[in-house]
Length: 353
Image 1: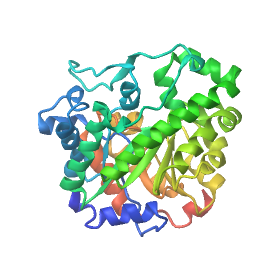
Image 2: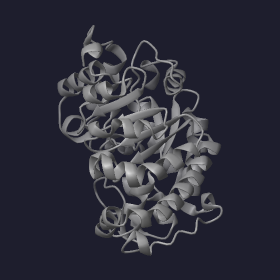
Image 3: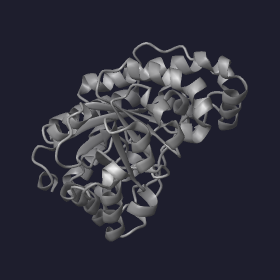
Image 4: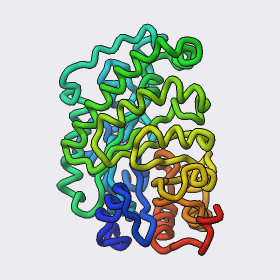
């Protein structure tokens, strides 16, 4: 199935990440891309793949093998680093439907109480080592056909999973100078993990700043508190790097661009046309198909229309706005991939977006 879309998919995706735009817009992701149809094809439940490298790799490859999505990405949950640092994680193993793992017991009530002594050899922790092994399996299995990606949360997003959420937001707003040290320490820890993922064979790294984006905090607070450790993390990693930010980030696009990643991904809350206008024609911009309202709950016609709109609005690659929702119908994923493969854009649309 995957090879029906593009025989040279990996080269095209990696070329784009290095600034070489081809004739078509690839359809891939750097975030979680696990679907219920993919899990069913393997006889697996979502809750059992996060701690088993063989199951994780097999599940991550299904969106390419079954639907043609032009990447295979791990990890499959956002709690890897939080769990490695000691937060208690519920993997929802017994859930009859796919549910994302979540932290049920954070480490502290505020960032001021969070003491991070970046542990040596964090990559040897069971949770991180599982992802590293899965990357190697993906590289051996599909790595000659599609790009293998890995991702880490941004420093502020990781902080949200380590401390009480109310305390996190209170600290950011009331004592920004006091959170610089903890966020820098988290940036260094995340760099250690991401570098281990690259060494294992990941072709690119996505940094997912979900909770600390300009859309969530506002441009001013983002620029003052979150941007510095985010720059620190990105600067520590080799290219190519993708920065993915949640929420209405149109007013903060230049701040995101200044973080130094080769490409930016924006979610469905954003106007992609406004993002393109803010960045200009040279920036590499991905987005922004709604993973729930369009992909999971819409029909194929709505998916195809959203893909055409994203390309006309200036997307260099079609991405789901955030993680692919597990309940997405197989037909909708195929529609997204195939529409991106065949649509070249309305003449003049990008210039007037």
